[in-house]
Amino acid sequence: PLPPGADAVVAQENCRIEGDRIWLPAVNAGDNVRCLGEETAAGERLIDAGKRLRPQELGLLATFGVARVKVYRRLRVALLSSGNELREPGEPLGAGQIYNSNRYSLLGVLQSLGCEVHDYPILIDDLGASRDALADAASRFDLIITSGVSVGEEDHLKQAIRELGELHLWRLAIQPGKPLAFGEVNGTPWIGLPGNPAAALVTSLVVARPFLLRAQGCTQVQVTPLRLPAGFAWRKANVRQQFLRARLEAVDGRLEVRLFPRQGSAMLTSATWADGLAIVECQRTLAEGELVQYLPFSELLG
Picture 1 (tube, rainbow, N blue to C red):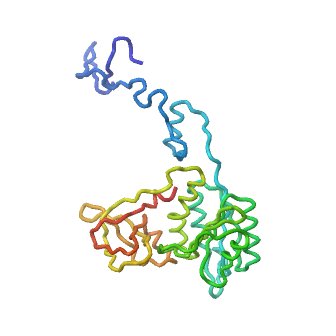
Picture 2: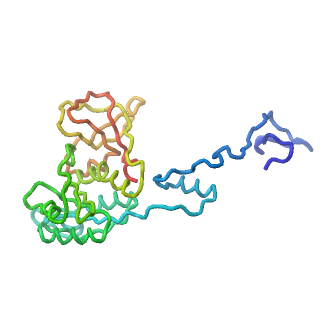
Picture 3: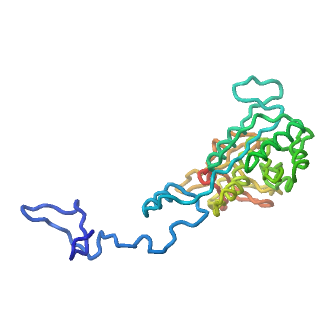
């Protein structure tokens, strides 16, 4: 508190002692004074409902002595990977088999969003097994996410969904990620992500993420894309919206969006090289230097 009669403060490091006197620089009324109510007025709202509590929000609540607030509990998510060809890292691979990378990338995405995840064993391509696992998950969790939905005759997930609930959506006009499905199992929401690793990762970030945040009570669920010069040309218009793995690079003093040269939906190397996603709208071409939308992974993961 200021002593009576004082209307300004001088920082100690800006003063010096000269004999038995103290030298002070010129000062104006109000300098280095924090007024009552200058940050937040009485009755002003500190945090809106639906706001995610980041470290800065927690600190603000503590600043004003708020010890407890009502929050949504963590969303309980069942995660299932389907496919006879899947094996876990560390196991030997047979002919036509691949490692189950989606389990680990999707688990990381879900945990970054604050979800409580139950990871089921690999689901074999069998209608009965699919039906049993989905029914069990629907009875115990708030949301079901699977990876491996496809157009093949051995994909029994969609049929199991139809028998247990309803398939609301099948396929999106995006690349990667066209074979995406949405429905419900005995009233529990289900999101079916593609099996290709890069497609599963991209759709988990641009499709599943907003749904998961909204289900947890968040009101701000979309990331506002940056608009930056493209360091590439997109000469052939596509009927599907492109989510291209990209990163920012400084060129002649400005940032440009550069693409990974191989954009296959099975290639996670593109995502590890990248720092975000460049968006090219459907039926759109792009000349080098034109502005392109860019979604940083730092905003999408968390």
